[in-house]
Image 1 (cartoon, rainbow, N blue to C red):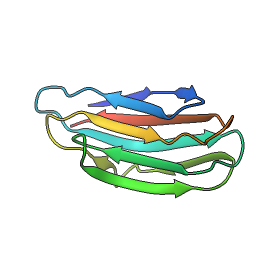
Image 2 (image 1 turned 90 degrees about the horizontal axis):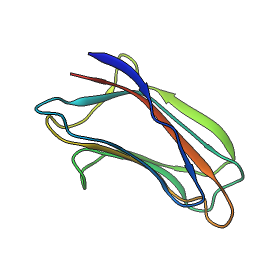
Image 3 (image 1 turned 120 degrees about the horizontal axis):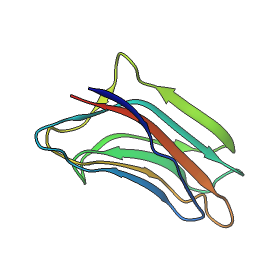
Length: 105
């Protein structure tokens, strides 16, 4: 079932989206988006499912928006597990925003 849910978060600290476990359902990401308002120090985006199992991770070194469309080759989490998406703090006064669009299977 495709929900097209958008989860926006912004903070001067790390930004975390936690998509709760639902029965035996697997969460699938169709899009990841992020933005830092200035060049981050230690910028990073990580997706885990279940907690502690990294599915995807990369460093972000520049200010501004970025996104990864995953339609067709979605990033699928573990059945019956939560999915955690973490945008690292940009350090100092750098703010970040992280968004995702997901579906369930």
